[in-house]
Length: 90
Image (tube, rainbow, N blue to C red; front, side, top):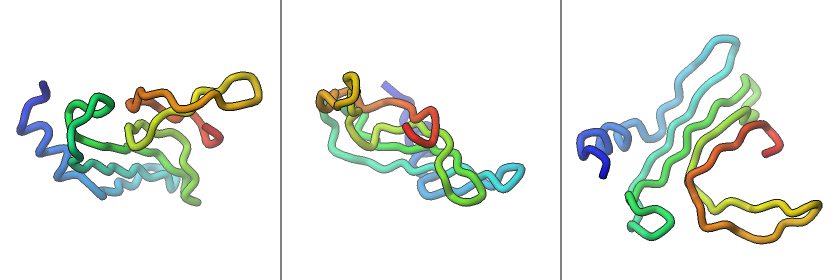
């Protein structure tokens, strides 16, 4: 189980936007939810890197279920929530 002080520090960062070089910026969101099998720690989070124009370049989150692609169609949601978005089209 995560350290309680570490969880509180993460929650204190909710909504923070951090400027980066070249106009890029990072946004962190973290909030409590009811623990569930998909989110056993009871924390929803999103850490994203954006261009100067607001386009998400990369992100890590558990704010939604993952869609599993199958050829050219989607086969449905997967219950795993912790995942990454590796590029703007992901």
